[in-house]
Amino acid sequence: MSGHSKWSTIKRRKGAEDAKRGKIFTRIGRELTTAAREGGPDPNGNPRLRIAIDKARASNMPKDNIERAINKGAGIGEDAVEFEEITYEGYAPHGIALMVDTLTDNRNRTLAEVKHAFSRNNGTMGSSGAVQWQFNQKGYIEISAEGVDFDTLFMTAAEAGAEDVEEGEETISVYTTREHLSPVERALAEAGYKVTDSKLIWSPTNEVELEPDQAVQVFKLIEKLEELDDVQTVSSNLKVSDEAIAAFEQS
Image (cartoon, rainbow, N blue to C red):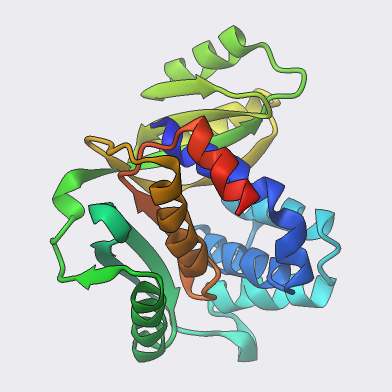
């Protein structure tokens, strides 16, 4: 399951470019809205919302923008918006399977944008169920590795119900079942660990490895999909190699 954590590392390194494109507030706004929609507008009782608020403040997002995004998700006041979750399926170049999770208030707009991203980047959209059989839905929690004893964190996560824990240079990735995402996240936060991300992802049952130049084509489609305002996460069955990462960062 290391592919998702490696892709997250790539995105962090490219974060400065996102900020230049004016995308950072939009992305954080989506996280705030989603968290408020799923767990309510009170960060004290909603760990995912607390994480999103911390991200927003660290990026100097205006307080009014934060409150507006939370209200949208919670259905409060004039900013209230009715959202629905839609998952699209398809293929990236070289037959790599993709699951695209979206949160939208206009399904026609979202479908058109997702289709456009696939077609412009040599991908193909599929019907419902076309690739989902190749994935299991999992919980994903990202912890800052700074000053963390891996073995101690591993035990805390395992005792709370985590399925797997992977150590990286900058972050530690914790994987859970769908049902255990919130309990494990809560246990880690209460133990004092800095949770930097928490969400549901699609974990591939088998990964496919490509040559670095072929993997770059897949990364570019994923990047374009993730730039869409309504897209929450993109999961693939691509095996992410260090060589592919290096090729993408140089592209």
